[in-house]
Amino acid sequence: MLLFQGCKVTYSFTGAKIGNAKTFQVNNFVNNAAIVEPRIAREFTLELQDILLNQTSLSIVTNNGDLVYEGEIVQYYVAPITATSTSTAAQNRLTIAVNVRFFDTLEPDKDFEERFSFYFDYSGSAQLIGSQLDDALEVIFERITQDIFNKSLANW
Image (cartoon, rainbow, N blue to C red; front, side, top):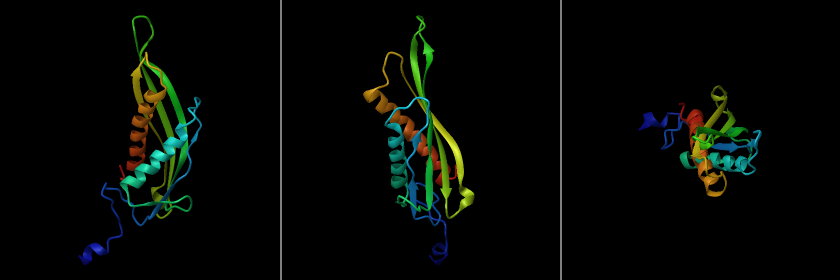
């Protein structure tokens, strides 16, 4: 029992290595994409906060966090991926990319800046509004935030 008390690396139930960190902050992500969907920057910021709250024992703070996440949405792009015989899109793909800067104030060698992206395919006859857009953002943000979590805290 005494052997384990001397260990300084802290793990969460998800396998995250948080070290001696107690707090994190997620600065507001801004939307610098050529096509601006007004709500996605705020939604992405909240999704990243949620995954960190749900998968670690860290507390969220608005400044001076032990772990700091910041960045910008750099791509919001819709493109056809398959066509019909009448040269219309049978399927479209929404791709979102986010540039993330991560700072570990306690262990600066873990800092990184990286671009994360993911996509959502939908019918060419559908419009990317309402519940269709909600579904797309849910899938994309879930994947991107999990990738950020893995890169910053799971050492993947």
